[in-house]
Length: 194
Image (cartoon, rainbow, N blue to C red; front, side, top):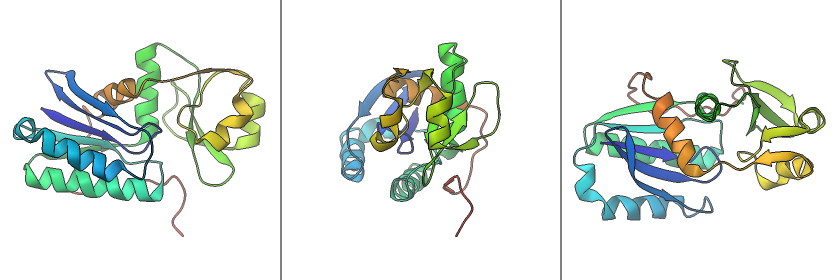
C-alpha cells in the first residue's frame, strides 16, 4: 500500500495505491483547509494505512505554506507507520503525465513573480520564462492547470487542456518508482534561497 499526496500542483489531492492501482482517491478545492481534509481522511482510513510501504509526494515548486504542510504531514506519517518516504519534483511528475498522455505539448508550472516554468516532455530541466513571453509563445495546446487563476488569464483564448487530479497522482506514483527513499522532505521552491 502506498500513500500519495499532492499539495504542490493545483487541485490538492491524495490517494492510496495497492497493486499499482489507485483504490482510494480524494481531491478538494482550496489550500487553507488541506490540513484538516488530510487528517480527517487519515482518521477515516486508519486501518488501511497500517500496511503502508511508502509515502510519495511532490516537493515543488509550489507555495511556501503548502509545501511546508505537505512535508510535515508526510514525515509524520512515514515515522508513524515506519515506511519509506519518496519525493519527486513537480516537473518530473509533469513530464510523466505528458508521457502517459502521449503528448509533446509543454506544461507550465507556477514560479514566483511574473514567471512560469516550462516543462517539455523531452527535457530534463525546468525552463524559467517570463509569463508574458509564455503567453506570446504558446498559442495552442499548452497545459495551464498548474498555474494560479491570475496567471491563466492571458491564456484563455488559446486551446488549453484540463488535467484530472487523479491523473496527476498516477503520474506521481510512476515518477516516484525509481526515486530513492529520503529521510526528510526538502521543499523545492524553484528559485535561489533569500
